[in-house]
Length: 246
Image (cartoon, rainbow, N blue to C red; front, top):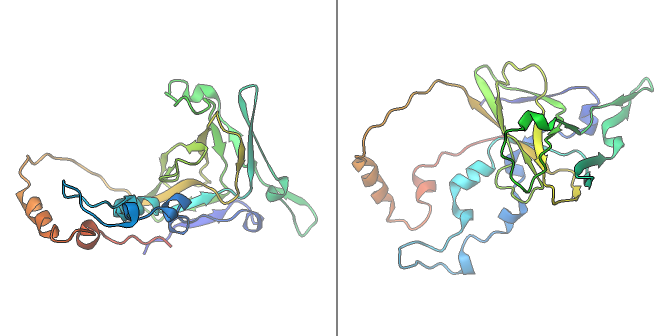
């Protein structure tokens, strides 16, 4: 098993800012409450499909639980003044008195980017066009040859922000990665402490080529037909590999 390391930027971070956690520990509430069967009675329609929901879809679960979440260490209040988003939080979460009596202050939770940096980006109308940045208090280090994909928490359309995605070669990058994001311009309120703000997915770098082999997939079709004797769990029982994130 490979190990991803999260190193705090200062010793005081350990007492103030929670480290990233496996995404599998933070399934969203909507998913937990989602029934697996529509109307609580298993039936098959005239097209041969069962009335099961997204909760039976293993690719969705694997996507949702991939990697690790970086979460907010504090409630963040979002408000707008003259069309510009403002963010505020408890200063206590970013400051701690050292043993020598001095106050150790961490960087702000949120900082800003200029609008010009994404001036040609087609930003959806529901978001403010000014990008901001989640500041990160842990350096992320992966084994040699491994990088990390950073992205918006998967299947979290309920969140009032959108974190931009990116890939960083974290086996070589020497400092913490920060995460640009957009905030909804029709939303004001509190983003609660513990809310996931970015999903971290480590992966092995390798070179790829592609080729097109034609349209004959008889072998695949025969293999799939063997699975159809079972009404459910075809992918799970025949082709899915268990992914482990600790």
